[in-house]
Amino acid sequence: MIVLDVFEAIHGRRSIRAYKDEPVPDNVLKKILEAAIMAPSAGNLQPWEFVIIRDRERKERLAMAALGQMFIAEAPVVIVVGADKDRTSWRYGERGETLYCIQDTAAAIMNLMLAAYALGYGTCWIGAFHDDEVARIVGFPKNVRPVAIIPLGKPDEKPRAPPRMPLEKVVHLEKYGNRWKQ
Ligand SMILES: Cc1cc2nc3c(=O)[nH]c(=O)nc-3n(C[C@H](O)[C@H](O)[C@H](O)COP(=O)(O)O)c2cc1C
Image 1 (tube, rainbow, N blue to C red):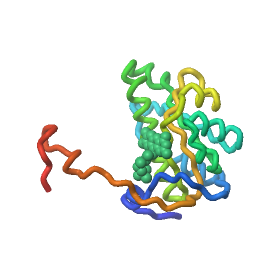
Image 2: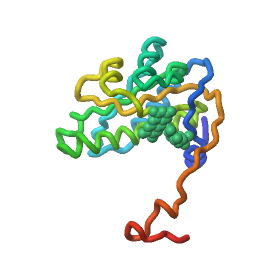
Image 3: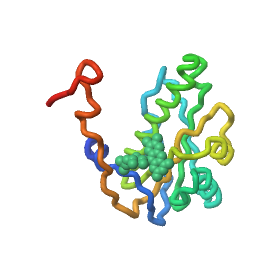
Image 4: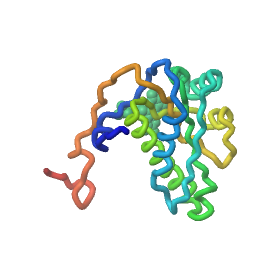
C-alpha cells in the first residue's frame, strides 16, 4: 500500500513525455480509474467516459490527431477522456453542457494523474488535438466531447518543475486587484 502525502503528490507530479517500454497491469489501471471517478461532479452526474488504448496503430492515429505529438504513441497505454454532454445538460441546460461537464471531467483527469503518480506512473495532459478526429478514432458518439488524451507509463525522464506564477500575482484579497500580502 502506497502512502503518499497529498502535497507530495501535487508538487511531485510532472508532465511526462518519455516512457519505459513496460506494460501497465490491469490492476494499476483499475486503481487509477477508480480514483478518477471519485472526482466531484455537478449534481453527481459523472459525465466522464474513458477509453483505454493499447493498440499501436490506434495510438499512432491519436498522436497524429494530436498535431503529430508522436511521444503519445510511445506510451504503453493511452487513455482518452471524454465528457458526455447529454448526461449533464438534461438537468442543467446550456451551463451543464458547456461548463459543468467539462469541469467535472477535468477534475476526474486531475485525480487520474495524481493517482498514476502515486503508483509510480507518469502521465501528460494532452489538450491540443482535432476533436472530430479523436472522437472518430475512439468511436465517441456526437454527445461525447473528447477532453484530454492521457498517455500513461513508467517515466523515462525526470523533468524539472516548470515555474509557476507567484501567488502575489494570482491571489487577490476581497476584490480583484487588491494585493494579498503575507
Ligand atoms: C488543458 C491542458 C492542455 C495541455 N496540452 C498539452 C499538449 O497538447 N501537449 C503537451 O505536451 N502538454 C500539454 N499540457 C501539459 C502542460 O504543458 C504542462 O502541464 C505544463 O507545462 C506544466 O508542467 P507540469 O505538468 O509538469 O507541472 C497540457 C496541460 C493542460 C492542463
